[in-house]
Image (cartoon, rainbow, N blue to C red; front, side):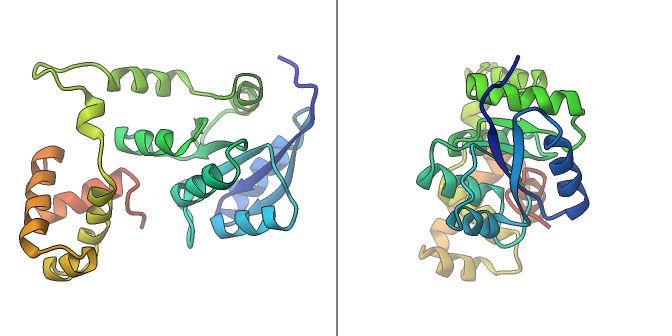
Length: 220
């Protein structure tokens, strides 16, 4: 596959050594050029505002100030034609669903081989998306029905309120404080907690927090 048009990229990752190594590698690929690097989403926004308009943005999922999720939503809203690739070690169902909903075009593991990285960039340019075989398999598995006729997709879908609740329950806030933060009654918050216990298969607040961390909803 040969790309004939120059493709400009912004690369965002708060791990400087990894980010700079990836930038140097990408700059050796024909017709791919990293025009800006960033440590977080705020710097991506600033770079674009300064006139560095990319064709592709590669984002680390876990970044301070403005993470990969928030940056993806911002880019999708303001520059929907920019192709977004997520650089992450997370491959959980909920993380995958949230990022696909936000408009991500593909996923790159941090231990990706240089040849696969080059192929991923070319695929995004030529076809608009890139999913490794493992990711494609996970997407297909999400639609399979279990014995209760419920798909993994249906089970893994979380509402915005449920995600916000998981973030708050992973903090040191009391349930009363969480209720005030969400502008809900404590009874409604208790109902949300019990619903998530059943939905996620956990039995305690600690279980909810562990689920949130494992699935990239909360970063540490």
